[in-house]
Image 1 (cartoon, helix red, strand yellow):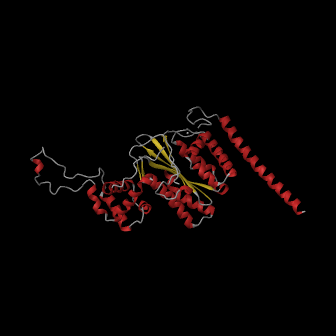
Image 2 (image 1 turned 60 degrees about the vertical axis):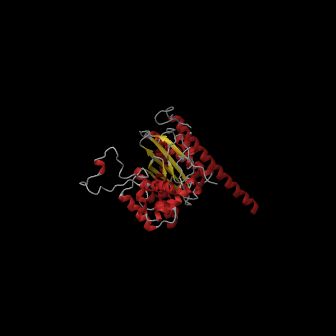
Image 3 (image 1 turned 90 degrees about the vertical axis):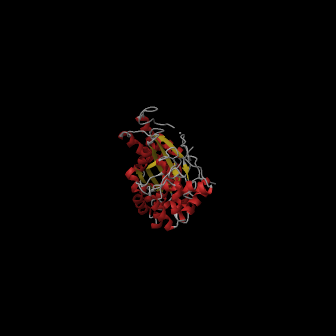
Length: 375
């Protein structure tokens, strides 16, 4: 049964969380994480964090704006500081901007801590890269990724929380992935999709409806891509600037020199990417997508031609479809109450310590029982 998709759209808000608030965010995040790990395990933590509704609620519980773009970057930052791989068995890799480019090295560090094989580490690095490429290239909804957090546990299970920005409408969109739900990277791979803002004419090459278009895109590429030039705008210069043309005399009857079938263009450099891909002969859409330089423009071009020539239309439906506890950093809907916030941290801490004590008492009771049996 295919998984439901979830994406979150959030307005861009400026500013930073005050130090006093972020310090508490880290402490409360640590308490919630330890409670979850005590009650369940790392796999359940990854399931919760990959659910955008749960993630949004967590952001609000630790005291952030309920609907701003900062819920992603700051909550992930708090998790990265709160969660200790050696103590909790979870690594939060990557982050915002430059930190996102350190994701592969963060994963390698986690591999050393968790004693993962080199093959498993390579698999995790690939999962990080392909998930980012899919949300940037296969889902063309107008959002450019700028945040990528990759969470993995000691068993090698993982989750992705990444966010893109749309400069025109000043919204951010968050994408969630969970490894146990990914049957194929290129078909319905997300954990789900949730938001209140639909972008018209969004190309979604990961939709099940785009399966034929994906196959034909690979076939088009594995045939010599030179024959695709005719579908795009013609950049060839006129034969001679001194040559007299008929339309200089008959201005009322002026036809365009070239009529592109597709209202887009591919540069010579972009065609070189297609030629290199042709030489490599990718066996499937995922292999094609993984090739260097195979970005949004080439993906879109192949999808358009597959529709034009073969009638295999991809999905143009936007794949996209909230809780306050302590207030928001900007005072909306009400200011954060520090006393209430500290009380929440203390309550969680006491509950966790009490649970651990109860477990210890049960363990000692079992040992006493065992002693009675063996007498």
